[in-house]
Length: 338
Image 1 (cartoon, helix red, strand yellow):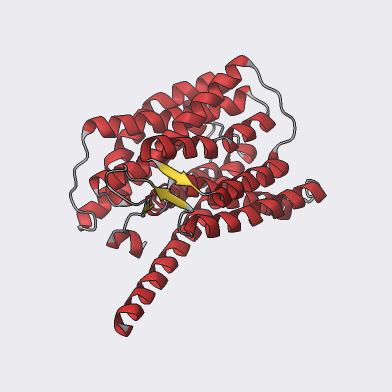
Image 2 (cartoon, rainbow, N blue to C red):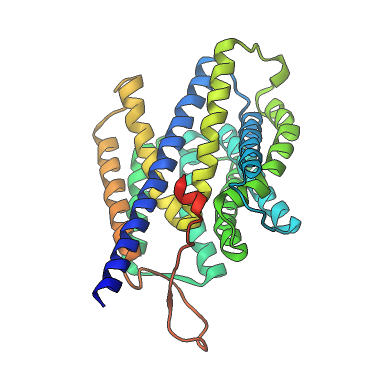
């Protein structure tokens, strides 16, 4: 019995270490790409966000091809209907977020982003029959409250801005739900799923991106004055994007879309802190610090509450028997190495 218990303890410690590494990987790459893209767009005037995202997925596609050529990614199957549905959700998410930011105030844009958590919860309840404990629900509300205090200032909304935000929120929630769903249903690792979806996203966004960006900014990407410095930042952004795309798939695959959204707001807090450190402290006031503190407490509470028995469970049909813990996907060997 003792060796078996020790083996389980070692296994749990290894899983926890990989979980922490996956979150750290996602936080570092996500915060890094936000800072690089801010410099690229604000300082060098490259305002073509949709086209840049297409470049990100093109670079990610090259990475998956290279790893497959080296033999690190095994052949796997994913029906074309599933690929096209995923890419449709993902592209509507990207374009919807860009349009929402243009048509809405920053405050309403932040509220729309926060609403992704309850939408993701709704999808898990309806599609996966997941049930949340009272503490888990309260911890999610605490995170939403804290981030709202930090980020929401002016709030104004109009009809077309509301429609853009609605499409952006639901398509993003569906895309993130689908990452977990496809990995679970077809036993795909993060690299496999990226290998199936990234080429289609890259092609569609590189074809449509310049048109969308021209519609949003009234500027043409081919007329941009490319310099060695701006090209360096574009290449750097694309390189970091490989890690951002991969870490998102790893985290959602290991956890769920809701957990990814809740704990992902740590990135929002870090971006605010880094902004204060690098760009001045005029925005750092008592209510922002108070909001950060509330959000961090909520994230810690969510982590504890959702991991307890009954905190977050997928309920089986009555004929099957007792509720089953919301199990997470076992990581592939390549995911663990990353």
